Image (cartoon, rainbow, N blue to C red; front, side, top):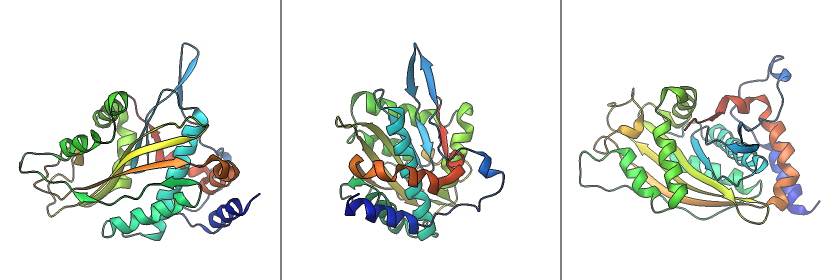
Length: 260
């Protein structure tokens, strides 16, 4: 075991998460969340999923194990960032920095990213239109089409549970932060994520009941950034089980499949 792996394990052992205390009932659940799959002609197909305040659209050739690695590591980073920055609605950039710090300490390599305000001259321009316009600069073809389907699917009754998880972890009063991304194999036995990261403060309470994708940009200020993340499997394979144990049985409460 080299020094980088030792450092990751030491970092994880001291990492604190925003999680409810364990109960005797919780010990009856398996530690590892099994990614839900559909059997289609004998093949397994990963479903897009809500992972806390993030949605992930997997490519058709992403293995179930790598998809579980994406879900577990991103959830871990979110829960740790929430513990470190509990008032994230007031400090979204600080929260994102904490989120990134966790991922970089468990094997992810992340490009630098900064937030820019979404600009529009139209009062009727919605958050959804702005997000899709931004995603068009990050993804093409099937990846972009998949992200659009995920956004639309979240508002359907069949995905009510996933929507509740997404809203509860991404929005507080009239502030919010969330990510929309794709995950695909990198060709060397690992995985890469391309995602749009967003946060918004609002000066109005309008729309707090409805889904904020439909809010008008005249009511809020939307900030957006792109990020690319690659997983160093030479490190992560040694901490995978540590992360699963760190999350315990709670992952099932934050990770929900999305029916397209």
